[in-house]
Length: 75
Image: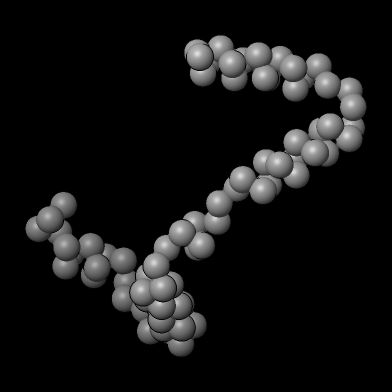
């Protein structure tokens, strides 16, 4: 199967659709296939992000230029 050709056939078919029910079903199908990156990361990563957000909310921030200078040797 030529995946690119099949995609083009689907696009052409979708562009010609007039049935709003079919379009609604396709939109619902698309939404069901969308993956939220938050659901894909580990609990440790979520914890680190939440900790960083809490620090930011408290104003405990490090300026970007200081962070970049710290890691300058690896850039």
